[in-house]
Length: 84
Image (cartoon, rainbow, N blue to C red; front, side, top):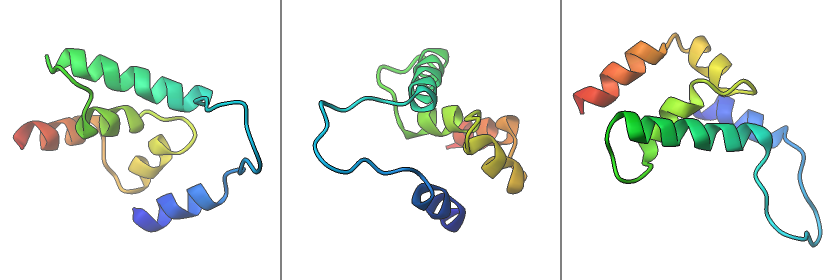
C-alpha cells in the first residue's frame, strides 16, 4: 500500500518556484467534501483521519484503484473503522 502510494506521488507534477498561493486540485477538494459528509454521517465535530480514508476510497485518480487492488470495499472499510 505504501509503495503504491509513494509511486503515485512521485509521478505527480511538481510546482517549482514561487506561487501566488496554495490551492487544492479538483480531486483533492472532492475528497475533502466527501470527508466532511462522512463527518456529518457519523455525527462527529471534526474531520478526522477515518473520514479522509473513507473519502479516499472513492477517489477517481488513485484511491478507488488502490483499494480495489487490495480488495478493500467501502463496506469492509466502514466495518473496520466502526469496530475501533
